[in-house]
Length: 88
Image (cartoon, rainbow, N blue to C red; front, side, top):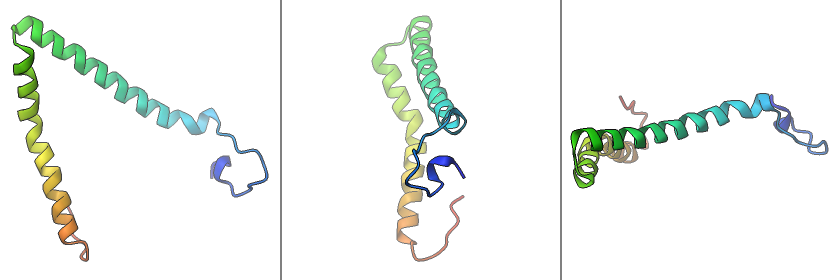
């Protein structure tokens, strides 16, 4: 168990690099993914001569099935909260 959660409230609770490095790498990967997504959008816009409005609408229509799928799963799970239903 990490020292910060060892249960001894009287000692100084400090996280070490070994305990904080995994979450920091996840945040770093998410940030780099966002930056590369922005760079990729500008690359497509410049080289394919597409307008910003078209790229925004394309992003909306491409992400719509995933959004609706997550919403459908959430609503289904909420309606069946008393039962153990696997969500595939």
